[in-house]
Image (cartoon, rainbow, N blue to C red; front, side):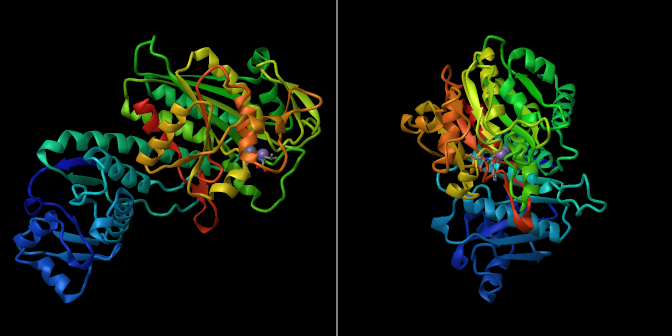
Length: 492
Ligand code: BES
Ligand code: MN
Ligand code: ZN
């Protein structure tokens, strides 16, 4: 989709559709009032007639408004003026997309982004616009004979003042990149596990690097991982006929001596639980157990679109967790790349087993920070539902930063304590660590496990088990936490 800025008077702007807002009780923002005036009070008349009151999510399409260059005016209810926020704005943007699609309109001018909403800057608002409209473009097509029709809107101009034009442009560019990255993450997440295997993810990363000069990718084979001593990661794929891989992507937008921020994704392309087999209901959703990896890939794609002057390394630990005669058994002990031995008490706690070796591998990049992203625990879904991502960290500054980036990008994460009191829950009688900590505090004990491999750098863990995909009728990957990761990397 194409985004641009418009600084001409709204009443004088030719377009298929001019999108305007009205607050509760017919209270008009300046932008709308100006158009109302130019049109000989066409909007006032509509309000007076009671066709629209300004209640949030109302929509009225006006045709051939006299004195206005636009062919149509789409008037949207924005709710109470004092409550209008970036979040409400986002809902109105989604409504705009629906309405524009409904009337099959290919281009529009948005006259809503200049409305005040809490303390959001014009750059932030424009970012949100491009993100929402790009996100809306996505349709899953890969394995359906007749895919749902695509979005019709192709060009959106965002009205802004001349002085805010460059800010607006900057926000639009970043938001579009984030939207593209989210759609990449969503598509990889939605692909079934018989297509999206570890090898497929590796090929996808190589293809992305081929198209982008700033990206360098390599895919480590099982033999190479064996030589590195990654027996914890390898133990997860033992039961599978699909070979495991470690994908390493280096985005180099800055000088070679700038330390990179590293992101690490859990890429379990299907999680049956292994010998500790999961119950059958909704097991299909375990194709989404690679959404950490998908968000990392999406973030790298977004960086390739935006080309910021930063260095980022992405590591994806990918395997398929299956039961078989070769599968790892409960009670087996494996040696991780760090040298620490692990008693695999439950083969369904496999995410931490692949991540720990990837986190040890991360050290070689001399990272500024390391953030891992994983659909790690059902306990996180129990705690946070699908609203907020779990955040655990060994560094307060990093945790605060990620929290703030989540709030700013409307892709929130909330911190849980990673205190020493929890560490004893994963002690083992037969190895240095056990891979489960019992039924309580599951998200924290999973974090404690990872923390034993990340002592040498500033690290945070994002548990996206609840936020990476939606279940039920609207089943599908969300593309989270690409907005949070991009916000962080661009400001780190
Ligand atoms: N991928 C799952 C976590 C998960 C479950 C995410 C449901 C989203 C929805 C992970 O590998 C897992 O199975 N975790 C276990 C850990 C337990 C055995 C300690 C869990 O959460 O039950
Ligand atoms: Mn599992
Ligand atoms: Zn899993």
